[in-house]
Length: 283
Figure 1: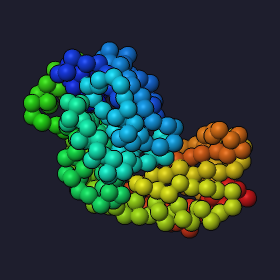
Figure 2 (figure 1 turned 180 degrees about the vertical axis):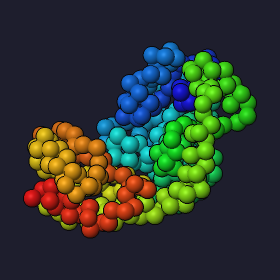
Figure 3 (figure 1 turned 60 degrees about the vertical axis):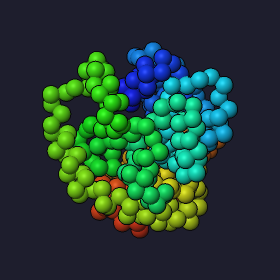
Figure 4 (figure 1 turned 90 degrees about the vertical axis):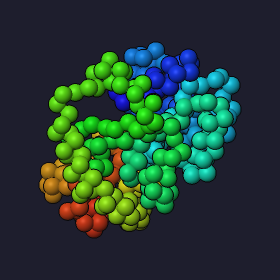
């Protein structure tokens, strides 16, 4: 609910319901436009199915907007990040146009390596930042919304209205603190390992990979979706390695796509075992 709250408050402060975001963003795609259905906001979607939008696309919008939302990284287009210069330009545009600049930073922890910037440096471009406590950090659940004290004060009433003021949140905070202590410092090594794994997999015939920008990336495999998923399930049962959720269709019926994410759960799996898994999958 935290991101719906941020957008709703930005809208109320400007008496404007328009929210600019990518059609494949988590807020629009995975939450099935809950921000519109639950809070009465109106989405203005820009960008393609394959890349984050750039500042020129933002500037070309003809309608006045209350908020501009950037997901970092944009998972559904392959965990891709907006270039730093583009973020700076968007930040300047937002200030000049009195548009609230919000970051969906559910995977912000995993993005610093790409920019070679600190969390503070990246966040300074935005008016509000949402971070997840359970993805890279590995906590049970939960999130944090960050902004100015005045903005966060405005958000509190909407936290209650949307059921986010949970009395049972304490265990989530404990596991999040453990994640900050134990996992945060390891994330850069996960990103580097994602590059190594992607390079290894790219050498296997029938596999194409996107160059990782974070610890997650897409792998494209030749074959029938059901056949690949059945064999992947069989391999997982036989050797005890579970590397991804499932293959999904692409525009090419003979090419299937899956997400690979490197994290704490893959520490005990060697790069060689991962390569062997996919070689066996395609044999």
